[in-house]
Image (cartoon, rainbow, N blue to C red; front, side):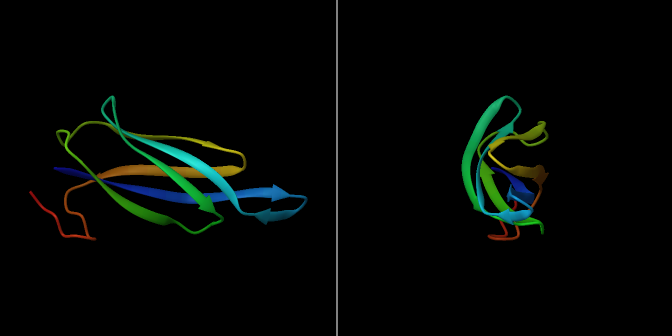
Length: 89
């Protein structure tokens, strides 16, 4: 079992000159396999992470694609040991 860390680095929408909550849909891939679709709501300029597990081979390219009405910046990385459940092959 593999694990990836999804990090939302920035998420907001501009209303005039103010930042307000928005919604985003993130699609996380391992290789060419879609492993998760996450609905994300709120507002942040500080990184927030979530750990996801999958059944595909480790060592494949990981990526995240997203749709958002506002401004979003996300990243995904493969991790060897999940800190939330300490899962380690």
